[in-house]
Image (cartoon, rainbow, N blue to C red; front, side):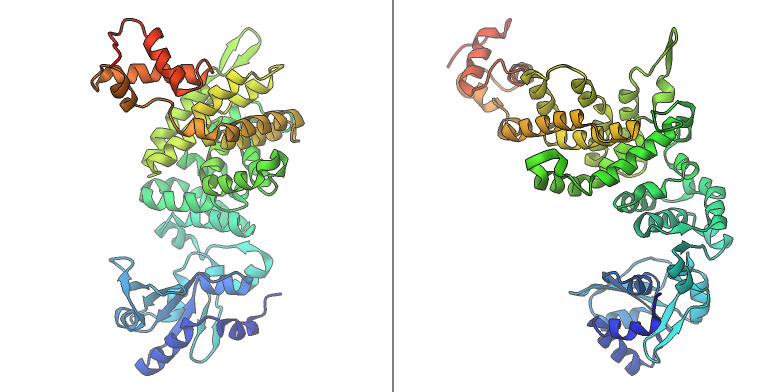
Length: 457
């Protein structure tokens, strides 16, 4: 049971509120705590930002609190940067607080607390919905006016684990097509936040995701694994297994701490790759007799994400990372199917992916668990072996054996296209274990690059 009477004691711990209250008294302003701040306080979460609404204009109030900037050109809303927390100030103008609350997205965000008279305002039963774990929209109009609220609703489900009320879910699906009218920067922000949550799989509504990632629903056309009816179910389950896997990475052995750090740094990209790794199987489906094949689905999906990721304003690094995992998502599965993994195979994988052999191991494990329902001990041992091998040769992977200056210092060569050809062949020999030292690399250049007029200095 959420107790509103506990609010006052909780608010006393938030230092900037005293300054806000004092200034409101002097300026004769009504000041309300609103939105997500109240929601998080009532749920017992740590407060990262303070949201207030004040009568009249917001700029003077924000200026009195410290350094500030306008959040949106068309709104009387400002952010004050504070050493403890950020303070968002919304000037209500002539709007009444009840009218402002009615314009908000969900009932759990449509509560207010009058900081001066200590009156709690909850006209839409937001506290009740918090207690029942329900996400309920304020109405059809609120979704039509800003369809990005659909993704916000999914984000709250992913973070809080709340159920989305049936009529709200129906509105989400009905207006999902309007997401194409939303600025891609906003879509990217919401997707990043959603995939950063601990329960992202709960927020995957296929009809909505198909509007963001075209072709998502087509995965229903492909049969699933042992425990999934179709590929769409399998893909969502892979994401769920990734969510679960991240809770205990000790199965990968002595490098647990490093793997945990890697996961936290790459969490969003890992989970997007988990959900989308098979999205182009319908496009690659091919029948050979009675057998179904999906040749090249990994390459098609990798290229597709580079394009759609750019449209959704993912950074170049984000696009490259996700595309890389999608492109190579079968690699460890294929290695695990062999009787023995050679050092040459491990070297090639580690040189190709570097530290991202960790990400590929996590993706492979989640994918396999979504196929059979359990973590396969053999695959886990393969992943441990690969990760262990990477850390044993980490310095080799991160530092090329030869660089351009080595060719200048040791051979009569001037910088040019020939450098790339030579260094590429040296690197390939290095990755395959044919050469292991810089001295051997220089001998390799001298003896094995045919057709090049190389003369020692």
